[in-house]
Image 1 (cartoon, one colour):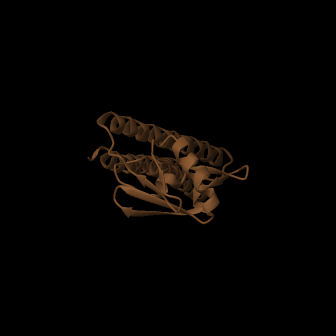
Image 2: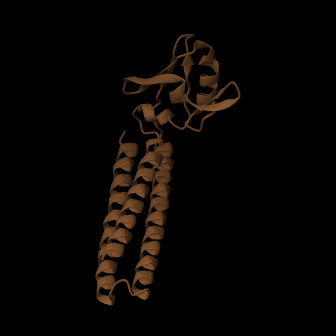
Image 3: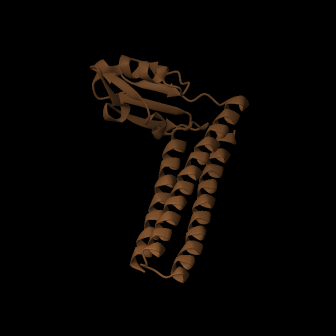
Length: 187
């Protein structure tokens, strides 16, 4: 039974990783509200090295529709501002020589629909990862049975259990995206 348990544990772990990746991707999708993790994907050219913004500055949310970026090295204000402007986020930073303020413009209805569609594409990626994990689990269970390490009954029970785990994992991914879509579409 140990090998079957290991296989099931691997499946659960793969599904958890798919959920984590989904959450990470969704955190980069802008909603109407300002969140510090919105700028996580931004890389700044720091003396020729693409450097994550979070390693160069503190990002805060002083009000619901405003982000501020305070670089630790003031000489990096311009490169940070340029990286934000060049990013696909569609933001307009305001540099006052000390700090960069980024007002979050309200999203247009069209843009909200595009972002909801993007969220659904990330959901599809997560579901593909879950299906791949299911396929690998099924193959491993078949191999365990073939090698004689477990009876056909044990493998059948494990397969039923696997289907339940996959169903729950897929439903949870749907919930994660539904919550994000609600966030995106709420004006």
